[in-house]
Image (cartoon, rainbow, N blue to C red; front, side):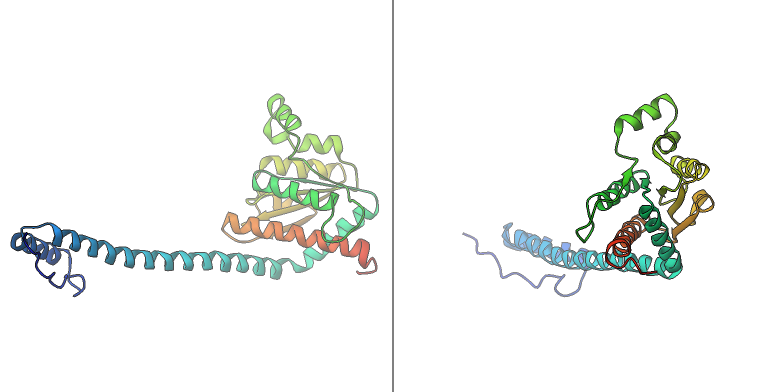
Length: 254
């Protein structure tokens, strides 16, 4: 049996490159007449690169996670600084509408549709405290209504027709769009305003056409759609919590 030679110091341990590694492996094959040293070399090479790549990729992944959370925090902080007074106004308006026996109609597309359903559930069921249910309807939930309107008329009508059927003067029409350019949300707000509903636009980026149509406009001036959505649902939770507070814990709070 041919005894394999003692492995020579591999070039990657010495900071040399692939060409040197190739030459070293070739010499070992020639001298040892065995693939054992080659297998050892390749194993070492894989280990070295795997270690370097894994460590680097893990660090990059962790840095990226931190960046996402920082961006989310920045988006929220910027939004509050730009809209603090308007948020308080919106809370007061919604509280007044609910006190008067009116309801909230929430609507949007995609993630905003999910937010509408989420927030309607918080009002109808409860948020943080035990209290009577509050009237709120998400216009994105009835698939038969939505598909019949979309099929017989146009997708841009799916919210406006529901508002015409369900809305009354003094109700709150709460439309959400990360771009501010969703035609069906825009048309829903326009219809609501004509009917005497209080209209609220919650948007992102520059607010789009929805910035000009509503009585109250809250905008997340941030370029990333996921970060805008995160601010929207946080805002929704803030409104739910403060409406509860004003209605049931501190009705005297102005």
